[in-house]
Every structure is written in C-alpha cells, then in structure tokens.
Length: 357
Image (cartoon, rainbow, N blue to C red; front, side):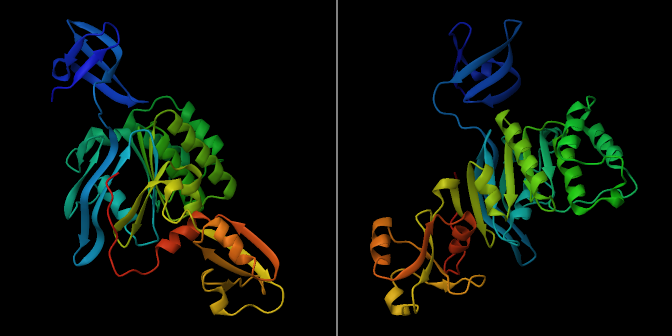
C-alpha cells in the first residue's frame, strides 16, 4: 500500500508505510492520526490524495443457512463511517441473523463481514470494545438491580466516570435501584440501551431498539442517537417500524426473504412517485373498469363510503383523471414509508437483487 499523504504542518509528501500509526479515525472526510516522524509525536490532519472510502461495516456475499433453512443469501452492503444506516424488513426476513453475523455470534455459511475493515468473527476481542449493541430480546440476571447491572457492564470497558451513565438513566427515566425481575419489557430495553451506550462506542448496532418503549421515551432515544451520530458515531439501525427509519436514517437497506432488494437514500426508495389518494364519491361508486387506470381502489374499513388507492400516475395526469368523477371528498398525499415498503413486498417470481453501496 503506497498512498501519498499531505501533512498539514509542512506540506511534505510521505507514503503511508513510512508512518507509525498509533490510532486512526475518519471525521468529515479527514483522516486523523497520531504518528511518529523523526522521534517527534504529532497529531495532525492529513488528506488522502485520491479517493479512499472508509466503511464502518461491510458485507460481501454474506450467507447463512441453518441446516436447509435459509437465514440470509449473498448479502452485500457497506455502511459508511458516520452515517445512520437503516436495515428494514418484516419479521423473519434475516435482520437479526445479519446482526449476529456482524457481531461474530454465529459463523457465516458463505461470504464475509467486516467491522472497521477487520474480518468478523476472526478479529473479535478489542475490536468489539468500539461497538455497542442492543439486542431485540433482552434478558438479565433477575436478582441484580439496574444499577448493579450497569456497573457490572461498565467493568468490561473500564468505565470509571458514571456521569454519562447517570445522564442516560435520567433521560430515559429508568429507576436503577429496582431489581431486574421487576422491570417491564420497556424498562429492560432502557437498561439495554444504556448498557450499549455507556462506553461511548464508535459503532452502535441496534436491533429493534424502540420495541417496548412508550412514545415519549422512544422520541428521547432518537434524540440521543442523533446526538451521538453528530459526534461521529456510526449507527446500524434494524427495525420493521418504517416510520423510525424515515425519521432518523440517512440510507436504508431493505431485506426480503434473506436477500437485499434495495440499498440507497431514504428519500430515493423505489416507489417515491406513488401518491396516496383518499376519496369519497358523490352517489354510487364508479365501476372498476372506469377506475382501472387509477389503480386498485379499496374501501377504508374504519370509514365506510371512503376509498383509498395507491396511484403511480404523474401528478398532472392524476388530477385530470380524477376530474371525471363526481367527488364529495378528495385528499392526495405522499404515502408513508410503510405503504411503499409493502408495495415492494408484493409476491414476485424472481429473487431480490443485492446492491453493494
């Protein structure tokens, strides 16, 4: 490897192999390193001459089978350093299997996964001190208090300053002096979130973190995640609640039956041209033939006489088409991410495509 570097202090060019690197991380396109040159230790900003992409998470044709049962199939994706990356799919799609592979909890049947450029699960050890993880299902020692549990967990990371932990306890409204066996599912999830954050990780892997939390605590959790991301923490966020992804994620991967069907920015998901139409006809509902260009019209179960349809027609064409009907009520909005997602999940004859992005 022979990449030229421009040293911020004097403009010299040196090959990377001539630097003794103590530590390194990418922040806003800059590589920050501590290096030793001529017995002088310096902390400097250096720029790569040419493009050099850094990924916190990478998978290449990653696969897992449980006997003959499918886990995931040829999953290839990359999570960029410093982004909030959503990983969405219905239950059983392969989200948790992918996360367990990333953490080295299970071995892949094929392909590989990397965390910070190091292969999983072979790297293990110190690598995971830089990672925080919130599992979908949480179970702890029932006779310990929340405080005892968090202090015990902190011991694995040599955390001595509990000011950050106390702040999280306060913001998530956890009573840390109760025993774990008395905690509701939501309070167990709070403990799991705090445990994952207490050592201020560089990568945070969240598997359904909002499940069990009441709406106000869920909003506070999102604020904490966004604040950490603003400080450079990479977030890998798995959920089947698509509104959560729409709220905080920069990019999203969609997984169906173990295969990726899309990777890209949230606002560029396939189907963003779809319009959600809610209408009520004046008089009798027109025939199916008369409305076939509009799309499949369904009556709303909660509002008899009102109908909804997801239409792919361009806006001008849609308005002109609707003008032929006698309507008492009309509302045209963008569909939720959930409606788009399930539109993509209609049965298909082919498998999903993988995207390395």
